[in-house]
Every structure is written in C-alpha cells, then in structure tokens.
Length: 284
Image (cartoon, rainbow, N blue to C red; front, side, top):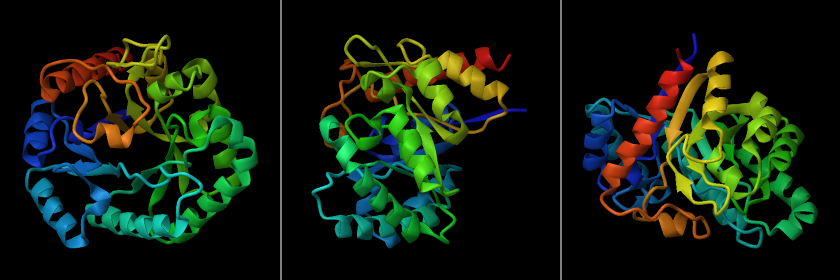
C-alpha cells in the first residue's frame, strides 16, 4: 500500500517555531522540511543551537523530513571551498535532526553557458558526494529555476552521469512550469525512476505565478496518482509560496509568487487543503 507522508516548509507559516508547530498541528502535519528558524537559515546555526531547536520539536512530536539547505545555490564563480565547509555543517545538522535527506541545487548558470559548464557542475557534485560518503545522507537535487538543473534533461544527465545511489531527485512541478518545461508526461516520465521526494507547489504557465496544488499547469493530480499507483512511500512536502514570507526574496529573487493578502497561516491552510483534496482523490 502506498503511503504519502505530508511535510512542509514551516517557515512559510511564520518565522517563529512555536507558531509553525501550532499551525502544523491544526493540519495534522508532523514532519517539516527545515529551512528557516526565527528568520535565519538553518545552515547558520551552531550544532548546540540545533540541538536546542530539535529538543523543542521533539517535545511536541515533530520530526524533520529533510533539510531545505541552500547548498549549490551559488554561482560557479563563487568560492567553492566556502561552500564545502557549509556543506559539512549541513551534514552535521542533518545527523542531529535524524533526517536522511538534504535538499540541494546545481548552481546558478545562465542558459547560454550550461553546455560549457557541464563538466564543472559534475566535478563539484562529485565533491559533494565524496564529502558525504559514509554519512548515510541522501543528497536530493531539486529542479530550481535558473540553475544548471532547471531542465528535466539536465537533471537526468546529472544523476545518471554521477551514478551514485546516494544522489536522488526532488521533483518540483511549479519550478518546471516556471522553466517552461512540461511536467506531465514529459519531465515526470523522464525522471520518475530517480524521484524519492516531492515538493508540492503548482504554477500557471502563462506567467509562472504560484497557485495551490491542482490550480495550475503542473499536473499534480496525474503525478500524484501515478506515484500512488506505483507504490511510492515517501514525503509530499508543501512549499506553498503563496505569500511573500520572511526570507523569500533572499531564497528566490527571480521567482514569481502569488502576492496574496492576509496572514501566512491562512494561505498555508489553502495550500494544505488543496493537497489533501488531491491525495483523497488519488487514494480512493
């Protein structure tokens, strides 16, 4: 029997962990993809700070599905040794949080430079894999807009060329739509064998703005139905992007979102309810 486990980027609810957990409890979500805590990226916390945060999470019954790390979200001209040091810190944080996954990227590369940048992108990812060897952590590449791996074909080339069983894919339908890629059946059928984790957000192809799951052109129903019927057991991680939450501009400076009014919790409710509706439909 397939098992979908709901998770979320709780920092989109509120910077405060207490408010994050209060809202997640309302929706019956007990896992979070940790990215921002009190307005600061998790990569910037010390191990002692992380242990304290973990204690608060665990006391209320919450667990961590993945680290929403910023690793690989730099230019190829940026200092890579600084990036490796940050990655080592993320590996330590992942172990403290007892998660098997770290979400990562494949560097900001202009489209016209992707072909000539391929070897350098692969070389750097080989280094990530080497540094992570023996940690037990699976590295998840996300198809983020404006990075080397924004297109499905390059995601496939990346994962097949590196050939590591500790490198898998996050599939984000909205990001593919914003990169002008068809999610269904094109990108999904190409990448499905390597997908172990889903980011749940949808987008409208006409202008790329984000909408709740099922309201855009990402074909969430078809993809989740195929996952369910294929026996997938894993996380569906809500990343609503329905409001300009604290830290969004730094995370995704070029990504259009749905600039809705009212509180983040209200629009988180919309995102959660939309996903639950689709899950209920495909799980019949």
